Amino acid sequence: MAIFVLFVLGIANFAMHKAVLESDHPLLGRMPWFFHMLGGRFSLVVEFLMLLGAMLMVATGSTAWAWGYAVYSVLNAISAWLIISGRV
Image 1 (cartoon, one colour):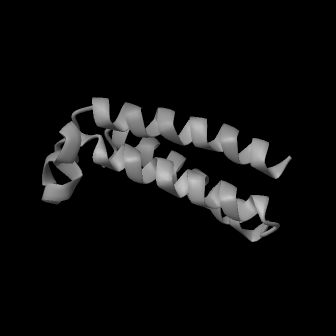
Image 2 (tube, one colour):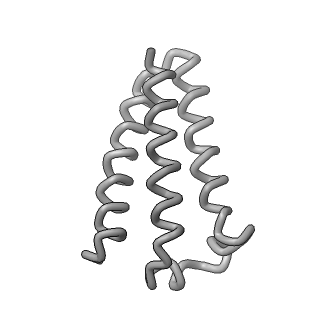
């Protein structure tokens, strides 16, 4: 069940991440050079690796990783909302 929840949170994180990338917010232009690798898609690769790592750790029985990824998802949602709404 925890892996399914992580998968759903991962889909939400990818959607939020993509929305932020497509917002062309001025903050994105101030990111380090490696952020712009692969046309700005390098950060999506990192997002995938974080999801994969969390799912692998949960599959081995470490449920704390599921809670950690859930907290990360909440913080990601707040950050995406701040950026997309223009509050930052």
